[in-house]
Image (cartoon, rainbow, N blue to C red; front, top):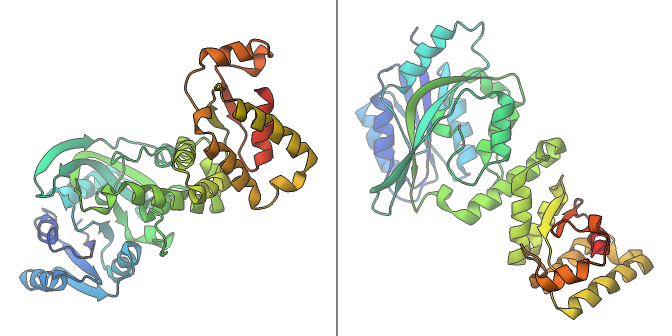
Length: 376
């Protein structure tokens, strides 16, 4: 068995990294391959480097397109691929020299009835580098033989660190898998990889784990993956898409609660409103009643006001109303009751207070927040 493997490498301003990446492909012990370089509107000398690589080895192909983002570039490469198997590879990562041989031989040993729904994956190494591309640390990520459901759970509980058990460089797709789904092309950041993984894992794809270290994921200061805010914005975009397709996917997602709290402390009302809309679970806050008399009076006034005027909590004003209340009293949040709080709650029903851990139902209106305040 000697199938053709198509390696698709989107590249945008990739001069600094591309040569090492392509060399790791061309030196594969499974040599029946094509390497498709998709130049996504680079403004540096990427085009010249791509043409130089084409001249060195006839297995290298070159596609130039207007800048449309990595999803667009990957889709262009997938459509041009002629192989039975398709490997996607970022321009700054690289492969172990025997990746394809090991994966394909392992697949043969499984004697599966069909291959058209197979995605092969393996362990990988995270390589952290500084601005001079000198390695500062490495971490081996063991993928393990997860079920589709377990992989979905890992995706939705992602820790915002490069530790997800599957990664672009680890996956070798049978070409027919892309008949189920291609990359979603949008102008907004949405974590295209996560979106694709979720869609495929919800179908009958067969994830075949090969227990060996087969690729290297480079983390460096100029990488998109190193940008904290970009990652969060992309992840929220991904969650919004998941919400539109199946709300149940967001049940028990710990990241939404974390992101809601971040938005509150940063007073980012736009992000707060986006997260509240898709939240499917109670949000837990540690509350503290301080000696702030104005806070106490305001809470009780708002409770009474909410009963007198439903208009105050309707339409788009509802989350603005809630957000304004919270941001004006940031000292109402704390991990510990102080003595004044303890003294205050002694005269209240003990079931209403359990370490001041207020459990919000999904915060779709200020009225719900005010009702929670009833227990204070």
